Length: 495
Image (cartoon, rainbow, N blue to C red):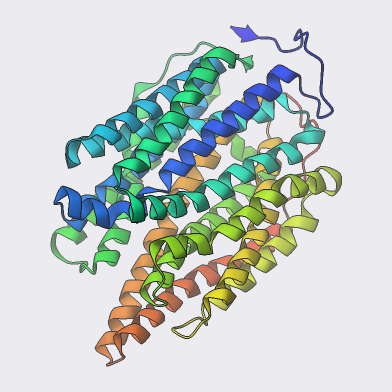
């Protein structure tokens, strides 16, 4: 089955898209924005949920852990789903799942139903970004991909910044249910508009789904992400690594690691007949692999830093949740506004002029964070965080475009799934790693007789040091990522 866009009678715009194709991309951008906005609102609400629902901090952690686990399980199979089913059906399914989960969360009578709601939300969210990226790469001409990917960066920068800020404002004035109450009408509007205007783009093919691959993927990626989330949660709550915690971690990583090995083996066999759940031949493209390595490094450093920084602002500098959320907002706005500009630069001159300065700026700011303390001015951090966001903007747009643009068209969906999976797992690893280092360093400082506030600042500096060290290889990798040719060919990638 296929949907041919070549016969589209609508006029073509300056960017090479028909009005129908442009409408589909804008609709997907809006839906992805809402989904990511929702994903980032929950962390600030956890203390309120603990008090309101009468649950422990360990139980409350499942509201984020369950979301992350679902994302880790669903994203790897999106490459297969996007090839099997038309754009319209996939979009309506995803936004319907997200809307259903949001409604369920709004009316949830207790903790258990709220966890179920988060799982349903995540199952829809996990499909959104791969669907957006695959559709964009399919319909946008290579010469215009940078500027269109710049619009994706608006979604990826503004939504994570607005989420905590919006959540803080809501929690300061209303209760936690309004977090979902505000998102729900927007999601329903997207559903109605999508049902009216969404059309299918690209081609689909029929192939049997390999159930064993689905099981191995769920156990592998789910096990690893669960183990990483438990490390971060244990570090945050000050738990020791002994007893049941150590056993849980060992089992999670053992099961996850073994399942991932079997999953890779299974995909290598199935891709010979083009039936792989996640086609690993994407890694045959050297530029894609280099870009993914850079995305991995950036995700570890970025997601860990963006999670730790608001805690530093609140615990050490004494800012409120709303104030700490507002601190990262100017940088996110700058990142969003620069996205299309950076995309145009990429279209004209390629990657190096963006990636290398972006990596240098990002690394320099992360090294600066290793020097902050109790007397650091919030206004200075506001400026510094804005500069960091600009450095990240110079990196993400060219990386996403160069990585997927290095693949044959038929592997776009699998490349998008790999990209999303790497971001999810690397982000969880960065958060877990930085929380662990922060907790251990802080505990050591307190044991050594350091005052509590100074000990907390020392712990945060230790965490930022890890991010800074990870950022150094980014500069080296940035030198080797290239803008791919406008047409990389449609020949099958070698087995």
